[in-house]
Image 1 (cartoon, rainbow, N blue to C red):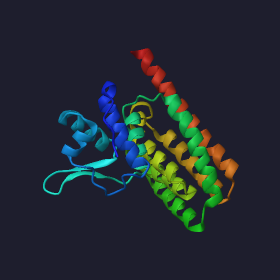
Image 2 (tube, rainbow, N blue to C red):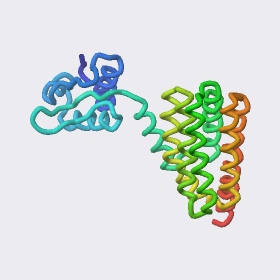
Image 3 (cartoon, rainbow, N blue to C red):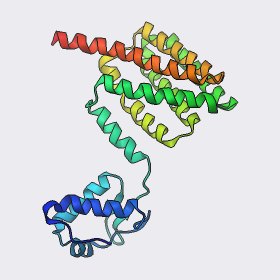
Amino acid sequence: MFQTAKQTKIFQDVVGQIQEAILDGRLKTGDTLPSERQLKEMFNISRGTLREALRVLEQKGLIEIKLGVGGGSVVKDVNADQISESLGLLIRSQKVSLNHLAEFREDVEGIVAARAAGRRSNTDILGLKEFLAKARKCIEGGTSQRDAFIEIDKQIHMTLARIAENPIYISVLHSVHDNIHRYYDQFLPMDGPELQENYQDLCNLVKAVEKGQADYARRLARDHVHRFNQYMRSREQAEKKVT
């Protein structure tokens, strides 16, 4: 299954060979990799190099290292969670500019809104309206309910992704909305008028989805992301002038 590791890039080669064996199906979910002794002989590498490679594969979510009797390196199911986690780390570290994040969200959330408008059911719309009712209560509670409102906002966006019926969109948007609060905390205090504006945008979007207005829903989602990004960009630039 494996070949002697190339000596010029031993570590990367070990990771690459095992990863490819998993991705092309030679190693399946639940399979246990050969023992450390066998892998060392197959790759002709040291114990330290092997363990480092296995740790990287575990961090990628491709294997799970089980200790003790009957343990070993077990192949995990490859799913969208790995992509989501990597994107989440990128966003949490704020290595993505506000403009790049907004550009990405405008495209993806516009597509999701349009697809949701074409695939929604009556049950879906009832669920979205329940979230809007909760969001309205947050608005009535004032800025002290900011965090609760942002959580409901996230649930509405995630519901639209679920209605769109594409697991990649669901995974990506989950990662975005789970981690974007770092940008909000720094650049979007969400005072009363901004909360009200956000709420009205959500109401308009849900209404467009309910009526099956795909193009309008796409435009509403894109405009919302663009406008609130402008608010954050203005505060970011103001902070830079102060410093």
